[in-house]
Image (cartoon, rainbow, N blue to C red):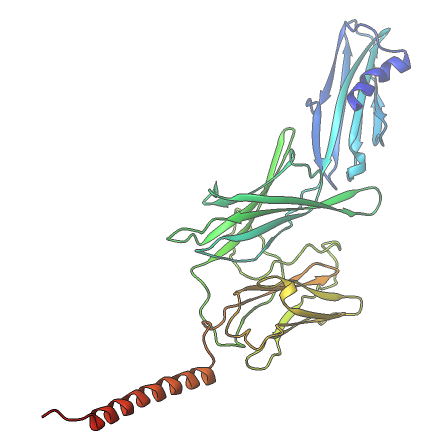
Length: 395
């Protein structure tokens, strides 16, 4: 649509005629140019008339903010400063030599692709089918033809992965910009032996003349976590800063929850707070408390539990949220897995992995059953002795 309007633009001015006698050059020469949000870019348009006459050159905008333009004899320079998403659109350079007119069209693409990835769960357990989700935050554009997501093992896509769904939510920003959070979920096959130490979630943005990728490591626990006695879970708390990787430094591996993107500027002096999970239950039952020691205006909520949140009782009160099992048998008979709670606003996560003792009879039930079996054996023995003593002897 924009290119069609751009072609008609000089006609509206009454300028377009069959061109000859000069060449209109634009730098950069590509018809589509991608610029990141916040960056600046310069576009230069030049025309030299074949007959030596002075050429007139001018940048024009089409249904968009043009930018800063400085024109002179034979050239025109367009600056796009601190590009915003709303600055995307078509620019047209129009040049003329006497009665002959020329034009070049440039389509400006503005994108947002920060290195802000999160995964859930933060660590995988080898030897079982499991779901994993990866989210790219604050991106634009976000269509599947531009943004692709995959799971990598050793630099190659992991085989046997089943894509479950893809979800995209928008996040309005100041002005007219609109950013998106894109989440893709997969069902993983059981990871083989020897188990890989780490997988990666990779998100790639493909634009004309540009391809960018970000990766986030997902550690793989080498076998299930050790069996723990009731009320002795592994508590995972978020680190003070997000995990970052670069070609110059070794990759960091952590099973901590990566900090969700902070909507505030990077130079903000406000230190983000994080939720924490504590166990407050008595022996034989489960009760967990998620709390955030932050200022007013924050709230925490439970987002994940083994077997689904519907199997538990939850109660939320601002910066505190409780989760109880509702059953005294929880500590001995329950599905193992991750408990997770979330802080809002901010989206920081706290996680806890629990593995119960092997489901078995309680000690009192086991003692009663053993006593019953012993009593039956003793009764059979007494009946046998009485039968031998009382039966008539053969002569």
